[in-house]
Length: 111
Image (cartoon, rainbow, N blue to C red):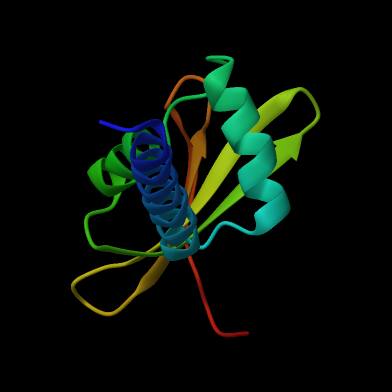
């Protein structure tokens, strides 16, 4: 296969992967700067993959994930996962990003 075709295929595949990653991050509700920090920490194995965080959040509070925020609190990394349960109640589920442990869970109110 000529090198120009290989280069073109590599470019198209790379672009598709990059766009898929951008779309997936957008779908989770993470902002651009949060994604960059979280991606760097995940690659360094400092935090768990987002899929595992979402599984832990849904284990604690079954429902549909609405939004996910990555936060740095001192030397601790957390994800705040907003979940809508089957009764229509919003919950904020905070998960330790490194260990996957439930930090806290509280019902969200429109105050």
